[in-house]
Image (cartoon, rainbow, N blue to C red; front, side, top):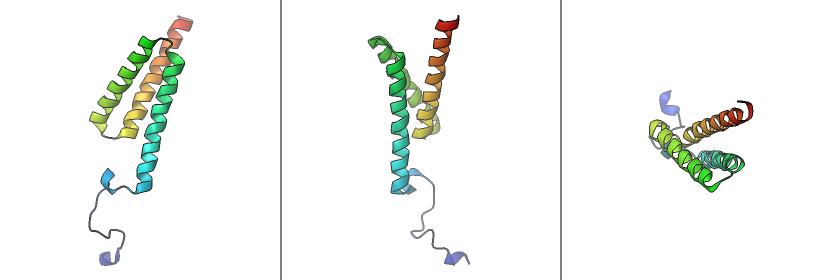
Length: 99
């Protein structure tokens, strides 16, 4: 019977962040920090000047903010932002090396 189900003990249902287990929150935070660290490594490897670093950080903040507003998922927002910056970096390198 449905009354025998003990998975929902407090009567609240939902899949929001407030209902995540502590381990899930730590894992999500770890993923976000890992993606930000990846962006920092990309920045240090591709931007030789202080102005380049400043522009990279501003673009990273704006992209993350845009995706956070649209998606409301920090891990997905950081992942999409990092993918866009990696693609732009690779296109820029290709442009200067081959064209």
